[in-house]
Image (cartoon, rainbow, N blue to C red; front, side, top):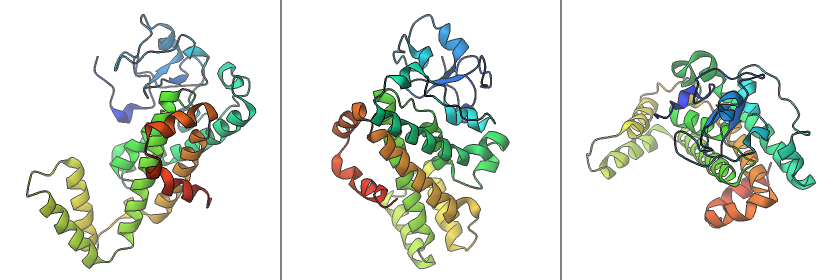
Length: 262
């Protein structure tokens, strides 16, 4: 079965029905795909139909994805009475709530994509950033694998935002030098889509035709919210140790330092 396009994140990966707050509630799996409650209950084998990741037998008890519902105009509901959230300790429940709130806040940057499509959305944030945001809002942070995905995606968003902000504050001569250095480093090889976008962005800046795609306000907000997601998920006691072992501690130290300044 062919995996759905990343821009179709507001609909069930199986039946393609748009999510709602009744029978088509979005439940995120640990792999990042989201199924509606209806299709989740009909799975013949308890595995994701796209990447064959096992699906827990009690997955129907997990809370619906609040970020996706918010993008569709539904209000965020309390998860206090959810059976899976109720299993968390008081400390873990606090960190979980904070992480979910930060993810919901990050999801607001996907509103142009949800309402008007990719063409309108890239006037606010570039496509790589939008894809990273979709990854974060689709994570199941009550499962260890989903927590790892969320932490890595939040870190990736922060890295990208910092890079964009640095570029915004460089002068044209510096950007021109970076552009030609990047091209030389590629050895005049064919530039893939991502590299083409980077090169075009730098060229536009050198020519003085940059647009609102890289507005500092959006980038600073993405950076701040991604740090909160990173720390909220990492502080879940049953996940933190495992995530720390799966990643390089020094690699995350700058981000943790930034979080302490919030």
